[in-house]
Amino acid sequence: MDYLSIPTANGTFDAIAAGPAGGRPVLLLHGFPEAAISWEYQVAVLGDRGFRAVAPDQRGYSPGVRPEQAAEYGMDELVGDVLAIADALEWSRFDLVGHDWGGAVAWWTASEHPERLRTLTAVSTPHPGALGQALRTDEDQQMRSQYMRDWRSGSTERQMLASNAEALRRMFEWKVPQSRVDEYIRRLSEPGALTAALNWYRANRPRAAIDKVSVPTLYVWSTEDVALGSTAALDTENWVTGPYTFQMLEDVTHWIPEEVPEVLTAMMLEHLNAF
Image 1 (cartoon, rainbow, N blue to C red):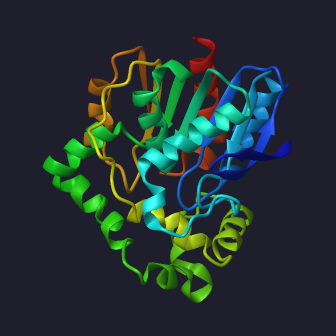
Image 2 (cartoon, one colour; image 1 turned 90 degrees about the horizontal axis):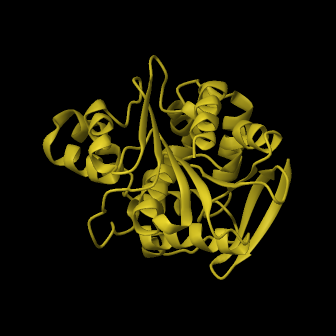
Image 3 (spheres, helix red, strand yellow; image 1 turned 120 degrees about the vertical axis):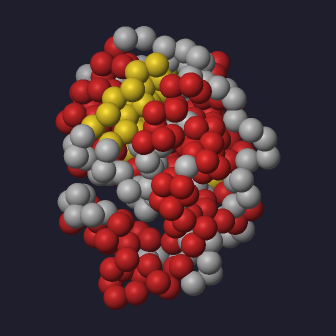
């Protein structure tokens, strides 16, 4: 595993990487409340298979890219970071993978900049158009997503870090290795880090509606995901015009990359090798 510092005009991103410098480039985006190391298994396997896999700590998680204002965590800025990282790595075209918030950023990148992507792999997170429709019409998804509104409160940091970060630890449902959870808590306990991560929820939402995605897409969803229900998951196919594969994992929670890393990685490799 390589540990990189990726300088961009937006700041310097920390990242993990593996594989030959000239290998087919794959960028992997993590979600909340995690970090690039959530992709450690996938990065290592992809690198071993000859890909050049890079997983950055995203905006707010990398100390070198941690603006204070919530407005600086909007989708335009997050998509801009993806392109800035790819440009810094001299990747004109690459495969993009994202989980949770990283999945949302990946969908938006694929919609707005399809010419830059070879394939898209979205894990857990449905197409934002499908999720938006579910939030308008599906009571189940409305209940599941209430936390997004709750976390905009200024008291959220204190509540999440109280009692040795018990609330943050419970989020992982005991499906992520304890040592990994401890590392996430350590990082998010640094001054300003948790506020920066929560600013993803507090930022203004995208200024325009998202379009359908034309790049070859793999979407992986799990039946025990507490945050993302089946309505948006099943509707996502209607938001992809290119080749589309939907994989449903039974009895798996939201934390797919770390709960079933071998299963997810096999699906990713099959998708990547098909295009």
